[in-house]
Length: 311
Ligand code: TXA
Ligand code: MG
Image 1: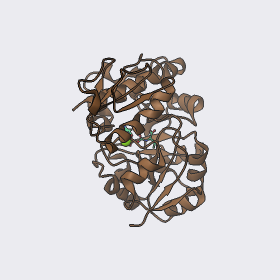
Image 2: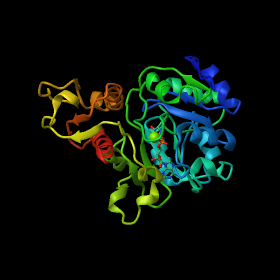
Image 3: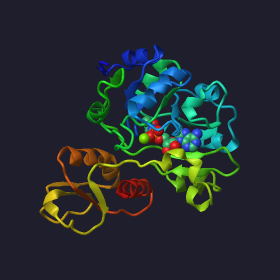
Image 4: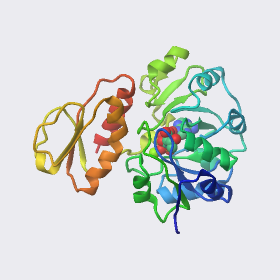
């Protein structure tokens, strides 16, 4: 397949309207989108990404009306989160409408919904004229793409079109919060923090405090965010700096073959996945990542570092 690259959201949207699959930038990471009501098109996403079919997709909307088209029910808590955080880096899980094909949600009766804050994503989804289901636009298991180049590296020749934009602003995937039950449950940390969710719905809890709930966010079962190199979370020097890289906030020990000193937490979060990819391109063996305090985007950053460091 020939993959078309365009900067025009209207041209990219044409491929979605014709049943194709299109990578597009959001403020978090690039997504790989298809018409949320077209089962055949959605199937192509799983093939292109080599994604396990038990991992549900997030539906992206441009308008509140489109949320109504996807949902069977919008709970009070969901409505509060929509009011406060949409558009933005938050995904709410709500009961799905029967109109959404099962393949989109891996057979679940719920669906993740998000309204991206980025202008280009908004114009693209609007031009598609339908909600767009999209996982991150990487090959399954690889770090999520935060640049056009990363999408191209993983998916050129496997998808219809790439909508080319700037590197993504946040660089880590959205916060996911399940709103299908009485109290909201945080399933994945992201730029919207637990404290911010609790500021509007104090009952919001984290998933690990609830016993027996591991399968609640199916994506969490799979290995994620991993470079080929070994990820070491540590403030100490690597065993062999020459074959190692460093990313963090404080100046590194000398001798690393690749270093990224970030100016602040937001810069660290924004840079992490592209740094992982750069390390792989250069055949780095170990990546030393400095740990950070777990508040704000720091929680999401530590979550991704831990996942990437699991073998
Ligand atoms: O920032 C983001 O969320 C990006 C951009 C493209 O929007 N998307 C993204 O999608 O990260 P993906 O597929 O890589 O991650 C979606 C996560 C997975 O962990 C999945 O299991 C969870 O959301 N999820 C989706 N639908 C769900 C549902 N109905 N119930 C529970 N978890 C769900
Ligand atoms: Mg992903």
